[in-house]
Length: 336
Image (cartoon, rainbow, N blue to C red):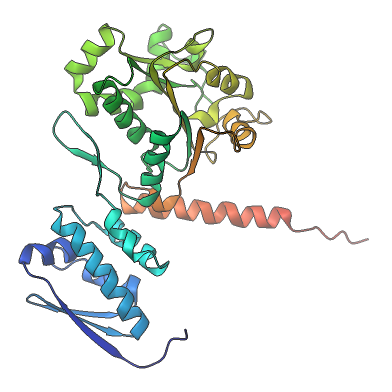
């Protein structure tokens, strides 16, 4: 349908000041964002909101605001990242799915904070973990790949679905070599495993984490420690899997034992392996794409749940990579 120059107006109301503040902010700082992203004029006075502009855009704006209001009424915060994401969904004809954001509680941290899916991509990821024995999650930093997997692992441990959690990473990053780092092996690999410790501490608390560690219910170790083992009744998470070699990935995947679940996470745009060395994650995604009981989830900049600037940075890098890929595919003309 073509847009017309006709100006159309619709009005909607919110019942309580808390709803209004939840959507537009204490100082109405979100209104310019709604105007810019939705392409409509928004006037708010008291509990009444007036939308005017192109009829299609006004209709889209109303759907978006109504669905965001549902989230506010559930007591969830509506930040600028969530506003942009809701608008994108509405523009794709998925306004009815905006209400799914932040609906289901996945876990509760030791401080009582609820862990929820903040995007549809995250929901797809969590569902894949529930429904498959092994799940691959590929996407940029800030999409919650590791954190959500650890949350799911902690819940499985508390529900006695598994006996232990095993978290591992390849100790290869940004061109550094372990031999150049000070200390014994444990001290050398600790910086690589620190993000995993941090997520576990947030979910369990340091005291509970230490108790589980002492009795062997939680293990955080470099990938090399997995060789030669069979891991039964465990929730095993391989983080930063883009930095595995083909041999390491195959070794890891074949550690799977009875009653276990695996989650493999990585960002294939951040490979730190030596030049010419193929990523085990990239290969595994090709080899295992049609294997039953293996879920593969692709997350994108839209699933970034950190500061909105992080989302903008990831999107800019994605566009740059696509531009370079197109220029490399373009046939070269050789002139005599």
